[in-house]
Image (cartoon, rainbow, N blue to C red; front, side, top):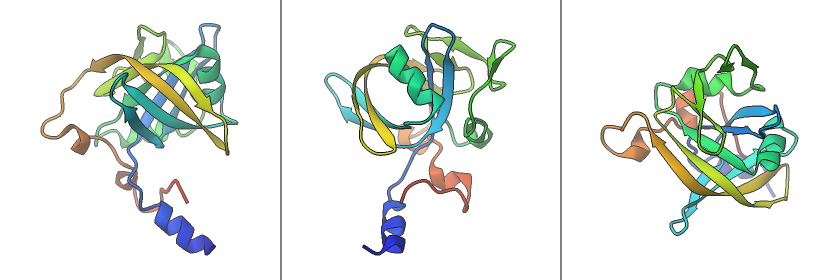
Length: 167
């Protein structure tokens, strides 16, 4: 296989940018910028997310059995970059961001225009990112978008010419 062609073609898949959060209830709180996300079913509503297996976020999601996906708007580039590194819980903030605990215990970022809380239904353990399947059990809409909801989401291409993931 031509490695350059593979990388380029896989980077043609559009990616939204989200902050995955979880709290295992035993002192481990995690948050990470993720982009391998999609809805996979209507009934029940399911989402899937690829989570790096050697990350603290993966360990916390697996232990908690729940997680939240915080949606980012076009004006949240700084927030996306803030969670590219391991999250820090200090002074009641998560990496400097205010939040509240959702019904699952997962942090819901106040700055996010919306979020879904999910109960983990299964994990596909293959590759360097495992696929976590979550059933949506709660939805939060802090700021309704104007126009199409999918046009309001921060996308990988919005982060600049040097930010790629995939390939």
